[in-house]
Length: 386
Image (cartoon, rainbow, N blue to C red; front, side):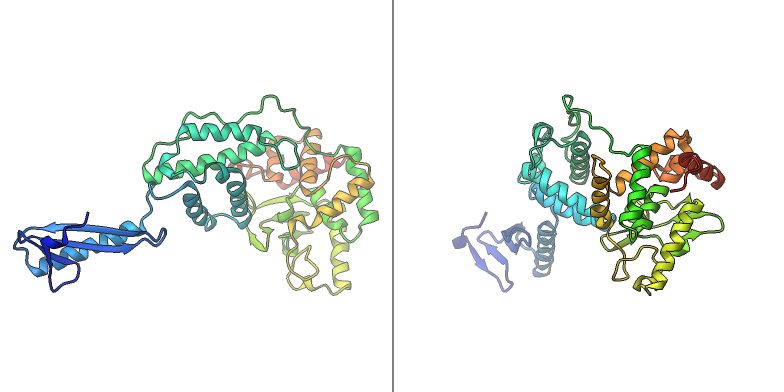
């Protein structure tokens, strides 16, 4: 509150005023960098305060105001403001595709409902309301989102709100809130190929798209992810040992570790090795730009292909094979997993090949011998040539 100007006089120092009773009154202002609002701080000093002491107090007052203007508080931030800061911090520690996924979920499925609420005013009621909305919201096409998709949104919301509660010492508004559920939702069949479809799909790929067959066969016979496929280098393939070392993943122009952060080895049977040798010879014959990069499956420019670059090819192949589902790299990966289980491959060996693991499980299967993996692949193929 401003003092009555009739009861004070200016001193030789700006922002320092003398009151009628001899006390000193200090006043500083600063413009908030986020809201552009004018912030003010004042202080009254006892009569007889020396000029040097008053100037020191003035400096402290200004420093405190600057700190308050720069430091966010739950009363200043909306959920949208906090998510912007949260995502900026997270983006420095996660892979770009993960950061992009966070941004998409926040902007499409969280902030439209909760973004304008002040951070310190988010309660269980608001979170419960979001859960009720998420359980019923339809896709733009009119269909229903899968429960797993909605639970992915929920886990991100919980993570953001728990982080905010910890940072600003607020009550956790997600405590005792039940996660979304869709009890009436029909169980969606897992999208995989049966053995007959698997053989037919690979045969069609060899006939119809010989230039992409090596990529498709590598995915189908190793179970690796698309990003791992396009991060593969020739130095990762040991023909003598019959091993492919999966050590990195390429996505959206970024090359980093695998999804789990752990490298792994998978067996390469003679059929796949023959396919890869023929593919390399084709690159040499065409003097492909990608030879210098060492990439096994380079783009036409010589750089990394995008993980989604194979989707149209595999989708068209599925139609030609009269396969009712859309086939992409993830379907081939799931099919590999399913066929290995049907072949009686034990879970630890399969996890060692697929890279499905927590840290504890990584330690469990770290010592799986390569000959066990070769035997597993041979059982899946049943002696057939692809």
